[in-house]
Length: 115
Length: 113
Image (tube, rainbow over all chains, first blue to last red; front, side, top):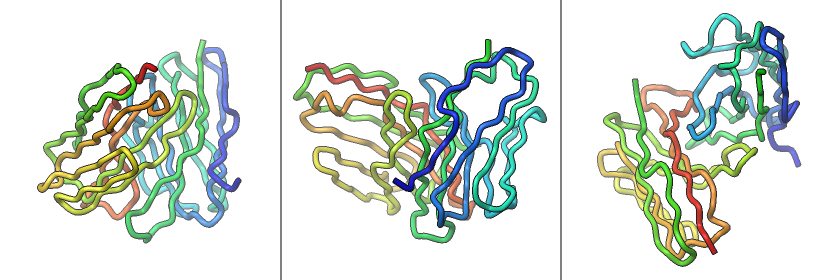
């Protein structure tokens, strides 16, 4: 299966620790998105890349959050000095720019619990 | 800020019943998508509607895009336990040329056998 892959699936950490998540998009997709979803809510946009360029960041993304996509393939999302409010599902999605009705394909997410 | 409001937020019905989920906004969207999400998994795309007034059918699911492209509905006929899940509508901003989506808060559907 060549869908969007996220690692790890689950992460439990203590408040104040740093965590990093990885996303491997569908290989031919040039756009990659990060979303955050809390229980019972819809996903909220965090940031997106086209190739290796980070083109948009949400105001939700505090300076403790940083995302990279160094070679335009996989991406990492790092959260520094985690807080309990960071507990959520972090979803990655990829798409092919310029396609009609550009479709986002989501990974299974990384569930973060900050104790 | 564009917002999508879904209603109801939670629905519990018996197998065989029909239901409708609504997705409303005061903003115009260039397209609207419906996703279904199961616990611990990412959303899976069901359908994309693009044209105002468009109706699409996917087996027992019927999707409609409002004439003004501000609202949408999902109707399920003869619901089955396998339909249980979180249904999300998501709109694409017409002024943006990205795939960035704005999601509603979701409707949790529980279908009891």
